[in-house]
Image (cartoon, rainbow, N blue to C red; front, side):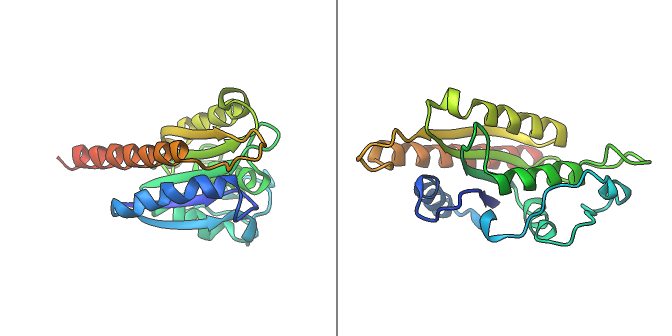
Length: 201
């Protein structure tokens, strides 16, 4: 089982990174092979809306030459795509948004002269998220956006793990949160493996 973690935080020691660390430890303990991409380290230009990607049906085909093609390849080679992001202005961070805009267009061949495949169809998606409000208020729009991304691209949404930072002096990651995010990781792995087993029968 392979996972591709798209890390949308600019902070390597921030809350999202703190929440992601035990999640990844649990995945590794369960034998998941993981590639983590720090999106702020990548060159990901915004989508131009040119539709050039729609003329190529066997790959993303984006006309822009930057870091997108390699990241898309990692997504396509994975069983699970993990979207890890803090919430800024009620949605994901800018490089995450730029990546998802381009991935949904380049990966879904609905808009060209000939209809083509959904290149990420069948991939599973989870989100590990932090925000400053109660999760249903702070991350609700983000979760709905991810669900619609999955429906449009033929991916399977498995859920979101979100915790709030109240900004107090206490550490963000406590024992309860660590145990909960480890449980979330285990549930994700078990769900994907059960699906894979059913598909192989």
